[in-house]
Image 1 (cartoon, one colour):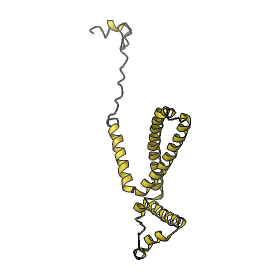
Image 2 (cartoon, rainbow, N blue to C red):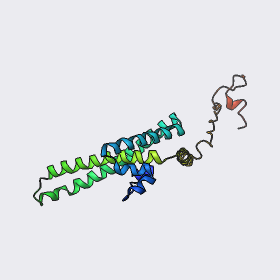
Image 3 (cartoon, rainbow, N blue to C red):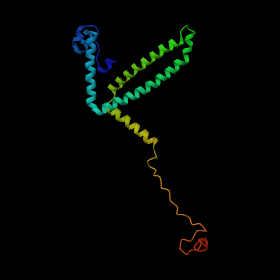
Image 4 (spheres, one colour):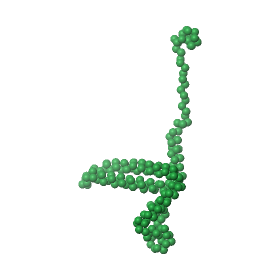
Length: 189
């Protein structure tokens, strides 16, 4: 993983090859703690470069978006795996294992694997996504939203026409004569 992110490899074999590429050859002679510190500096540098290139606000939004998406997908996957574990855990009793102990151990392992997977995927995608890819994804989401909401904005609801009060046959005539409508203005209708 480190090799792909930083293009660093330990030059195998001779020290002459290591001397030709001092940064890479240096990894072969370092202790575990020195390699850890070296890679930590590299990661922090790459992280700061990414933040500076995208801008503070956009980078923060990207981190939040990625974390939410990854946690959501990994949690769903974890729940499916727990469901599968529950379905088959009763078979452990045939193997002379306590199903409760086996379930507790394996579900704990699944949870730990989920947490590791979340961290791994967040770092993986954070270092690989570019701002243009984020904008493309936002544009796709907007298009999907417009597709699902199509016609809602275009159609304007017409206001209901308020009908004037209909004059009944036995109501007084609106002309003011004092006669019933059926005997005055409404005689022909």
